Image 1 (cartoon, rainbow, N blue to C red):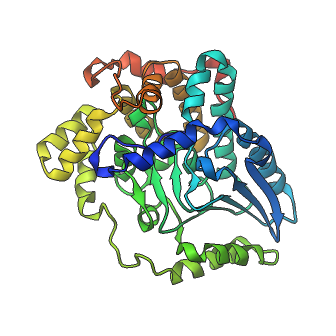
Image 2: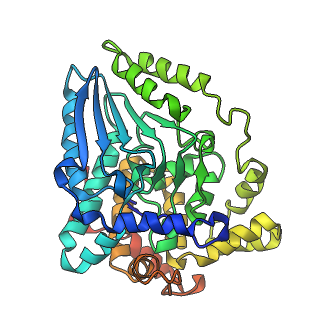
Length: 386
């Protein structure tokens, strides 16, 4: 979500050491100089936005959102600005999301900040989607949660072999927000449902093959690509697309590699076509293959409430517009931060680091329809409006 968390409970990701480092970066992020957290520059024919917190994996905070949004709107109206580029500083991350620990800490002490974070982040997601100028996100490195929201709604998204995509929110008592309810159910087959419920990570060219990126470029060519885009003279959308296509066509890394989930897609489409989380679990149990049991193990560690919210979010989102989805997700965000599991997830992963959250309710059958409906209820005059 904006609120991201990179870690997983399974040996599949066996990266707990690196993951803990990432999480520590995200929790230290209150102490940086606000002025330099995001760079907004006019270069050549473009407006360039650089998320400038490489030590913290370019994690997004409220002040960054409040700087980016008005500048995006200004460039959108400026006749001298022909495209907008969004990128992250450093080599590790485009944007690993937002600072969940700060959100958790401020829920009681500064509820307005927490409301503003989600409200303004989602408004920025929508502004990217409706941007009148071609918008190009260079999703090099870690791109999760809020970083997905800053990229996936743009017209062009360029992945590299170092791209790492995931929406792992169900593991911390949240749900894949920032418009996840819009873009995930629109991926091929039931891929989005699988990614949303399991937090599965896609790397490199797979981010393109999955449809999350529109182009793939070898990372050593990324600087040249940017230079060529900036050097365009009053370009049309077609001129920009041509440059991206040229680089994409020439990229060689993993050119012939098949999609990591290709051999499993038929089964994923079948398992995740179920209308309830319980049925999905039953499908995985009945299949009994090692891949199915691995997914079962992952899902069983997630917040039961988050799993149910997420499945309904995607099913409803599949026929909604992005603004309608973001309005729904704002309601969900406020219910989650007012509930138990989000704060327990933050405790287990970031504070005590015991990786052993005690979810309430502890199992799926205890998550009632009433609980679920309450998450989706209108907030009346506090609803997100566009």
